[in-house]
Image (cartoon, rainbow, N blue to C red; front, side, top):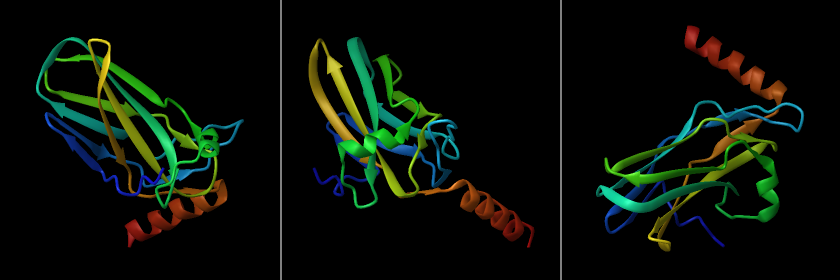
Amino acid sequence: MDLFEFDTVSAYPGYIFEIEKQSLIGRQSSCGTKRNLDGSNIVVLLTNPLNGDVKFTVHAYLINEAGYYYDVNQNYLDGQKKIEHYNNSSGILRFIFRNLGIRKTGQWRLLYALNVKIDEKETVMLLVKTCPIRILSSKAYLAQIQLNLIENVN
């Protein structure tokens, strides 16, 4: 599936699903050492207040820089990949992915898929994708951090 057409904001009547905050860089994770992306990744759902038997689920998927989803790439994504909320009496839900890591260097994107289930029926699915995220090896990441510190001093 080509997911390039999805943007950082997705809308459906009564629903706005958007990225509030995203990581732009990260250190490569490994099987033995999990490295979280720099900063939290936050997606927000704005709706009319909904009460009753409502379930909101957001899944995080790893897609390549061009926006394509491949099953094999999902093995490179570490951390909490699914968040659920029940009810939405306030009209605003924040889904905070604090501990995502990526095991392969390169340019990647995250795709967030929102499913809204009302009274045991799937009613809405919205997709948003992040801007590219650079994943660096440990050595390259530390060099980048040092370079950023030097630039900030000047």
